[in-house]
Amino acid sequence: MSSVTKYARYYTLYAAAAVEGERRDLDAQGCRELLRRAEVLLAAVQIAQAPGGIPDGLFPHGHDGVYPRLSADDGLDLDRTARAYSPRSWGFWSQYGAPAQVLGIVGYDGGRIRPGRHECPAEVRELFAPLLALAGSRRTEVRPAELQEAGAAALGQPCAEERNWLASLLTATRDGIHRPEEWQATDRTRRATLRVLARAVALHGGDSYTGALRETVAFGTRLTDDPVLSAAPEAARWRGLLLRHYSVSAWRSLWADLVTEVGTQDGQDGGQDMSAAELRAWLCDQVPDGTVNEALAGLGPAYDRAGHSVPIEPRLLEEKPAPWRDIRVLLAGGLRARDGADGTHPRPGTLFAGVQRAFLGDRREFLDPMWVEALMREYGDRPVRDLASRLADDMLAQSRRVALRKLRYDPQTGGLKIFSRLHMRNDRYFRIGEESKAEIGIRIPQLGSIGRQLGLFEADAGQASSLTLTGAARTSLDMVA
Image (cartoon, rainbow, N blue to C red):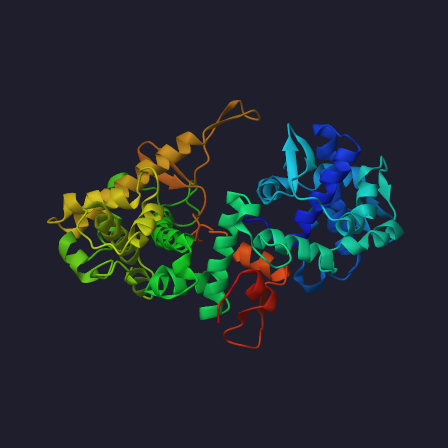
């Protein structure tokens, strides 16, 4: 999955297009043109089915670039639209291509799209046949009647073989049975993650896949008590990832608040540019009196004596949004890193080691939990204000590092372009935009959505705990009662 993979139908579109690319022996340029035209046509047939609006909120990728060029009377200028609907060279294949290759439904050979190790079913090829025939022709105009003829490929139109095929690949099963020796390591890992998510939905329900996973996996004893989760090493890794995600989100929120304090370049927002000293002073004013060690004592232990994570972060996030809350979430992450680094914490078998490996990562990074843990040792007996001052400097330095890493030549101006919302002039900072507080995606919502489209999950909008497993999911994912 990527953050853009929304629809199962695009996976099968690319699988069928790969077969067409091989049949016609298209080179890289030919494959690129075929995919761009096919994506435009998939959006066009969706829009053509509902002239007054997209049905059921199924907005195809690129619809905003296709809709203005589609006429109910004249049809579609396919060539012109295919050139303009997306600024990406390969359109939305850029987001689906790697997932489709890992899934094994598409191969990629020097830019040429070819069939993958899992053969695209004949019924799926027939579903896209009219659409791909138009995409592969040299036609510049497509009439409304031709769009209607290709309409079976529109989003939301059922295709049982498509659902069964993709569901079997997602769950690594054949005829509802998983035989590990028949699947590659990536297939088994994907199945394990889907089983962990399915178990979380079965045990917690709710209306959020990410929420169900957090409630079930991130904290507590279920990783050792539950028969499904205890048998999946991936569950411990997901716990580590979810715990790390709290720290990542806290940095993101803290940085967004700091940038908001800085005025814009033209001063129209009423704010002023600020020096590093002024930003340090601002953050220091957001924290209470007392030492860092006293703040740590108020958090309590990060793990219980059995090695299970204690829910510090959810408790903190219930408080009113403020920089001090985010700093304490970072300190909680530092506590978790400390328990994994000092060799003194009890460990139940390999569970704790699996959690810590995913939580800490395989390499050290700027501002990661080990970085924070080192600051906790350095500043333990010092005022929290001193730590806040250091964090402001660390964020400004990291912003500079990231900006320089993204530095690019701008052919329009002949100069260098810095991709950053915070800039410096005469040792004073100004901003050219807001930083987002939105969480970095972990792809679980996308996985759940694709699973629902393939008949693995159901949702009842009339129920508080709306997410449930289908019978197909319970069978193919070996869910116990």
